[in-house]
Amino acid sequence: MSPRAAVSANPWAWRPSRTPWFQRLTEAVTRWEPARELGLEISPLVESIAKAAEHEEPWLLHPSVNPLTSDEQGEHRVQRDFQLAVWVAAHSKHLTGTVTVPEPLWAWWPDGGSAVPSGVHDLEAIASAVRHRQLPWPIAVDVWCRTVGYPGEQSWAERPPMGPEDEAVLQKEIRRFLRAMTAADRGLVESFAWTTSITQVLVPLRRVSTTHTQSASSRQLPGLVYITLKDEVQILEALIHETAHQHLFMVEVAGPLVDPSHTEAYSSPLREDERPLLGVLLAYHALAYMCALYKDAVRSDLAPQTRFNRELHATRAKLLDAEATLVSNQQFLTERGREFLASTSEVAEYSGG
Image (cartoon, rainbow, N blue to C red; front, side, top):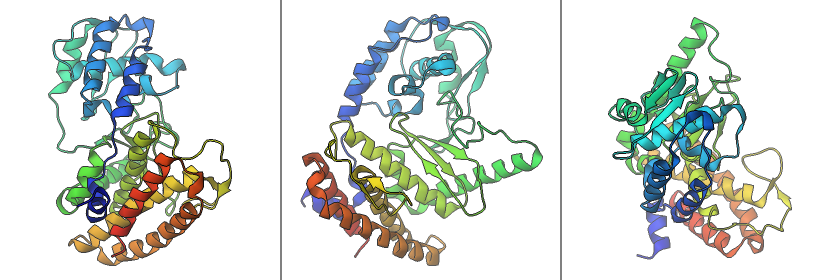
């Protein structure tokens, strides 16, 4: 079976190479200068990151490495560098050294983590305290944006609960997310494995209305998605949508997918405003996988079947719209972009049969 035929038969098997991303991370860590207040011995940390990157360790595809991947600096630098040091230490063997905590900081771990009081601490002791605490889910919920080090827009960290009613809403939404994970783990095994191969953390967004939902991801925050937790079907769809973006971000590191000199804007099926051609390609790739999700859900015994069928029909219409735009303008794609479009078209065929 040819590679493209394999993608058409099982779209969840296509996971673009991450080698260029890890190579860029290796370059970035050589320039890392953690906040002086922490008093970190940087050499062992840099060596551990470089070694893990060489072996393409998946724990590096995580928002905790954002001091190496993000331009965000300012007042959050101490917390962000501290979190990176703890994350590296927790995934390394025999990493020695101390860290000076100038004020209480948070050592995040998938179970939520814990506060570390001010003072001089053994870095390995902090790492040891968290590394053995595991969750049954491969996607952790980071309500307070601890992995990032600063509150995301419209997150609960930006606008904390104001009272018992808000807290009840947040708890209900977290339970909703866990039910969605249970459904995916049991009935959508391949798509769940594809999702969790790169998405490791979810930050829930506060809902601004009863109908409107949002989701987001960033090239600078690997392994992280922001999602409104409205209902289980919407959660699964948004996870697939943003995970598709995360996979595409890996491809982009090796080179542009669209000719950088091409600046024309186009109608996009996922946005009211016109978007650059890369935006249409992002949408097309996400829509192809959203359709594949609905196709698998229809074939499974997951409920509600009527909604899955309706979503598949509506989403394929958007998919074909984006495909038509890209095919008629593929001369503006780079060679890598045309290859990516061809593979994504194979994914799109999966849900059309």
